[in-house]
Amino acid sequence: MKSFEHLVLDRIGLHARPAGMLVRETEKYASEVVLKKDGKQADASKLMKLMSLGVKYGDVVTVEVSGEDEAEACERLEAFFKENL
Image: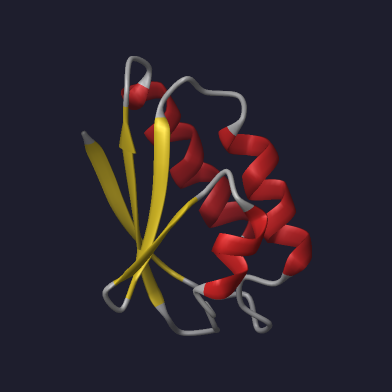
């Protein structure tokens, strides 16, 4: 398993547009991607689950990636978060 933490800098937080983009990004990989915040977690391939985390500006989220392509997926997802959140 690979993981990274990310400080959310988008003023609106994880709203519908970037959440949808994240779902599409996770679909590119065989690995399972889980987003964690404040003791709650969500499968990053499920839009409504992501939205239920209530990620806001200034929150720190942990992204965990596990599976056969976890190294590549983790690296690209970290770049995605930096560019979009």
